Amino acid sequence: MHSPSLISAEHYFAYSRPLTTYYVAHKINREGLFIADNSFYKNYDVKIELGKRAVGIDKTKQIVYFEDDTVVEYDNLLIASGSIADYPDNVDNDAVRFVSILRTIDDAEKIIALSKSTKEIVILGVGLVSLQVADASKKNSVTVTFVVGSKQILSKNIDVDCAKIIQKRLEARGLLFLFHREVSAIRTKDSKACVITNRGEELLTDLVVVKGIRPNTELLTNTGIHMSGEYWWTNSRGQT
Image 1 (cartoon, helix red, strand yellow):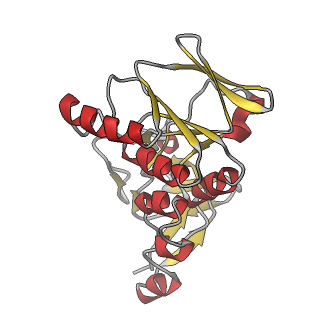
Image 2 (cartoon, rainbow, N blue to C red; image 1 turned 180 degrees about the horizontal axis):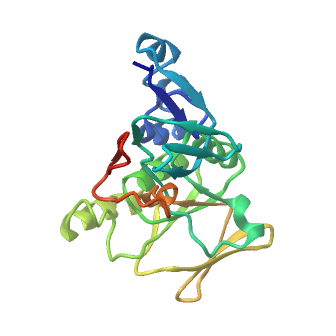
């Protein structure tokens, strides 16, 4: 029986993504993010390769193709690609440096670095992650504005009445909310990012934080692997 292999596009051992907001807020250090180290993989005889991004699968030949032009053959393949940030497609190239998602350790460290010289932050969406980023930012006396497509905060978590109570307390702390807004474009203006809403408003800011995720399924395009639910499994007979 062959030892299992674990191949990851990231350069880190297993860590908790939800804790990245606590890392941004300086409530934990970098080491506090990790839930496994090299000894874990050694104990279970797992061959691990980090920083290796898969770009394609041939389920008939039982081969995975990687970005570095290498291939790996498999007997059984578990695809645990999870989700990726839903990055907006209306960001001008020269404004990309002002825009950050929060999904990985690298994303968190980009926000930490940018926050050192930031006076204004615009956050797209107002979910739990967004509020934690705002909480970290307000400690540095940063002006935080939320651009929200819905009519309330935490629309997927709480009802309207509860949202109004929480919103009032957050506004008392200086947080600003623009509801029923969509972002038409993100550009640069006066050496800052300029978030343009569907109402024609222009919000100048030092940093734009994007929330929202979607299934990371690009790897499965044109593979013939059926997608159903939150996991995929292809065995040695190419069945899914």
